[in-house]
Length: 187
Image (spheres, rainbow, N blue to C red):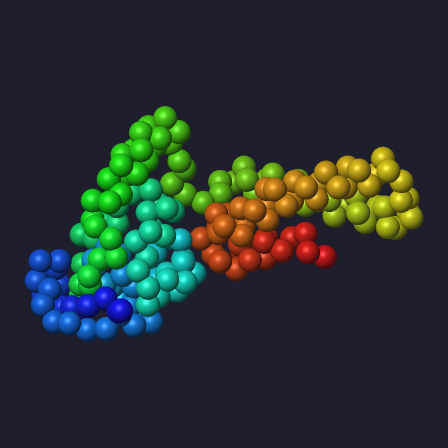
């Protein structure tokens, strides 16, 4: 059963004045009981449009909570508001989870940005060592364990550091950078 969605006219864009029913479609995204324009939200989303497009036409409440570990800032996006819909779950269902997130955040604060310059330096060193060592091995035909073992170690660093972070979209705001770095070991 599709949730009931209510449309708000542009001059009434606030959470309290929602009255007309509409259908949740691919150009919309629901968070809690509020429906937003997926296109407009994807243009403003700091993490890029990939995640918004992935949940277009769906309720993204759980995805937002699991990734951001906080409540959605509805008041910041009232200009993107389309309407309201029946919530998938009760609004207070995540109160304990959010409290746990607040406690963890005080003990282990997260960086609120993408990869710093030191990460790119580490990335360059790891990739340079791996590519340089592999080229040396092939050009000299030195297929010996004491060269291939360190090469395997560099490949592990690429997979566990660069590919992992890139495939989660955590290195750059630019999805193309993340996609390219996500396949750095696929040669």
